[in-house]
Image (cartoon, rainbow, N blue to C red; front, top):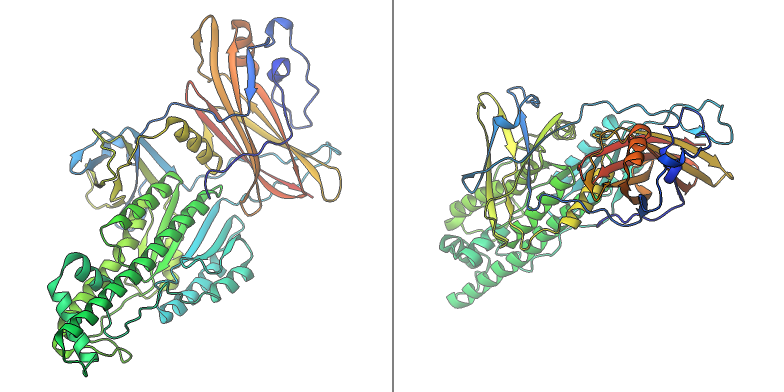
Length: 583
């Protein structure tokens, strides 16, 4: 999914004299009364446009999430910007942005919606707002059959006991086969989990000799003579009738090439679908996390590392935490393979075991890096898979986000290694993003601004920079049709205007969006209010604020409301949540 495109809907904007009405009371909004002529907005003082807002933005800002835990594994939330040091390729950087994301804050209460047909009728409290979205991504491309059976059972038990009224879960696979979008229907989730089967992208044409992707990469891309010798010995062992050395070398080389191509295809397939999963989860309005369940897979230091860096960038910007669970648990490497393995030379079995041990450790790297780089957890070397799901499904209470603009950044796509340290970190454990890939071109401030607005809409974080009061009303025209009205009153006292040509200027962006009960985007509207106010008008605006009414045609049901307000000059933002149930 790319940028969400807001569709225009029926909307009444109370601008001019009506724009300065007081915030609506608990009952239906009263008829608007024109303000005195001297205090109304004359033509040209206030206009609206259905165009994307543009704000100046900090280009090339690299965001680095950090989670700090004490000796008991509990997230620490009392650190300040001065407690951190951040290095880019060994050079100390200036931390220009610092934030602490908290997941333990209760939501701001919202008043019940008003039935316009019966405004005095008391409505039930709004339904619980889904605020936690967890996508379970099973790497069926790399999961061993026996490991997959174990994690399916563990995931079923975990979800049965952890699914709450405010949580939605989704089930997807890295092969792209099957899949269930976000829901709170446990029976559907259980059925989808139990339907997952292993799906390799390519089946190696050469089962004997057995060449792993890691060994193939060492042989073909790194000219590793020892690895090549192991494969040649195994080739002779499983082709005892062939004595020509040149023929055996050709078979061994072909097997390595085939394993390399198959391994690359499988690794890239998994990375692509992790990236797609990040895109999907980013569009959910709340706490977003992915649980990647895998045996791990080898990602060589080539262009696939760029894919990994892109996943991290998208996840960090979308506030998506990636957790990883190594489905192998506590594992051992069997010398010369298990009973099903054939064609292993006894003369080279020791070297093969060494390579397989190294490969098994290397396969964990991608899981650890995705978790560390997004503030998630990596559960491994433990057979308690059910407990592992419970542990990593819990988002840390505190996530520090450090932002910096790299000095003298070159647009060359090069990889930059990052290091974060604590000035006083005794007794504390820290995980953070390990690196990033430099862009190949400068960022577009306008596009960056659009993304900033979009991220705010698809969040559940309530931002108080601008006081905003949000109320809802509905009117049912039939059993299958209704009109939902979102009333947002913006307090303008804190808005920063610039003075130019005898006027007070600022642009205000107001976005209203609605989501269904599972958090899927239904509709929304973005408007840009351009203000070019005289002194008298500014006084009225500052004292009375602006009321905006946005109407959506919907079917009866349960909806979550999100209102975001941003001003361009002060670059302050407000965000409020609401919920409504239309019977």
